[in-house]
Image (cartoon, rainbow, N blue to C red; front, side, top):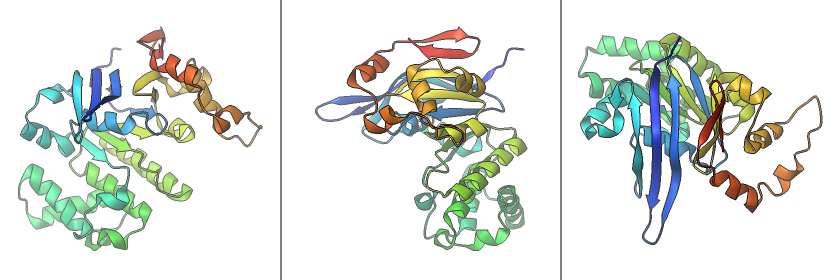
Length: 301
């Protein structure tokens, strides 16, 4: 059975244009996300994960700008839409869950008002009891009581704020969630709770998720497919099972070898002490294309 991609990105490049130089943060990136799947976008800090995420929504802050490529989402060419058309599409069909929930919510507005404003902005004014019911249902999806809606963000714990952001992201039942390292600022227990909530919401909505992060062990528990990003380019794309069982790119192999194990002592001294050599970096950055070596398994060459 041939799957139709929900999101198809082709040749996307994003530059940061400075007075005396131009830095390419995302380089000719192409990938697909299918319906009802979690696509894990993995890479070290500075690899271009968040920039790519903002590029998909055409929300690159200055001095960044999209210089090439196409982003097709559910039949829409996102980069060809007007600002108003794109604004209406965001949240209703394409929603963003931020990396830092601590600073993403409006500190001087109650949680209820932030939900209500989102609904009103995209769907117009609605009866208060109807809005209240929708907010209650959204909070229930992430196991939060309605009392949370009456709180200001500073009255909530970090894990609760992150769950509020998830509930806010799904309040309009989007088809695709962009989750930008949603657990990075949380303790291990809160991370597990948030991931369980995210998985539960995905099942309820039948939505797809792009899960951005650098924690390979976390991605292994959640993602259906993985894209390994380095220097703004994909090094490898494939199913999570295939990449963990048979990683083909040296960078992927080193990422996986760095995962701690309670069963055996792994030699991670190269990663811990000096990281990648300059020669290795240049080899990776000079990769020109992704080649399909097995069905659905692509490796940079």
